[in-house]
Length: 328
Image (cartoon, rainbow, N blue to C red):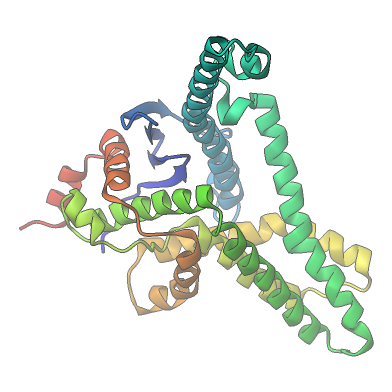
């Protein structure tokens, strides 16, 4: 395996691929075409040297990935909004032909204004949604396990054991959440695109030309996946909270929240290391996260792989990469 440096994420009916500061979003429209958007994202903290310091850079990389991820999701969502608008106009015409006043019911979706991302959400609403989602995630995965374990103090005296139980509760909630949302049809299709993203990168990093056939037979799990990052956050939090002792519940909850950037920074460095090197040690560290990717990646169809290949083509000279790293 040779490290390529490219990464990406699944969006609604599509893929975003990023290489350095360049990114491209490829989306399969309801008509079956592939729409592309290319751009440059230098990051919210571009030019700041302290954002490159190990164990600190991971926090800023995570923030940048969220910002770019939301931007790409908004772009992909507009095609779904356009389809809803078209269906609304068709319904309106049918109602008019039947002598009914269908305009009032479809007027909201049928206006000829600007394209609204994510089914009508503005940028402000998308930002608010992201903030609320972050607060809910912190509450569910960081605060709730701490509160639940506090009830066990009557029966368990060991702080080390309590921290271990708290960690397994946190990991259990995470797995339960992933399992639950994977059953939703829209999420399942997004996971299929997620699989196609991984397959493309694995195809190249293992020396195969980027064709649909080669991509389809490549692995849908990858060591640098965001799912693996989240698992590392869970695992490292267990180790860290076993070492850090806090006397009461309010301070314990506060410590869990304040240590999130520290845990994220450590997790990023571990993920970065395992993604750049391929040996027995890195495979052992990566294996649990890749197992969990079984919940967040699904086998894609060939037309999904075509979308991923289009996104890669726009940001990465894969032929030069193969020639340099895998000479015949």
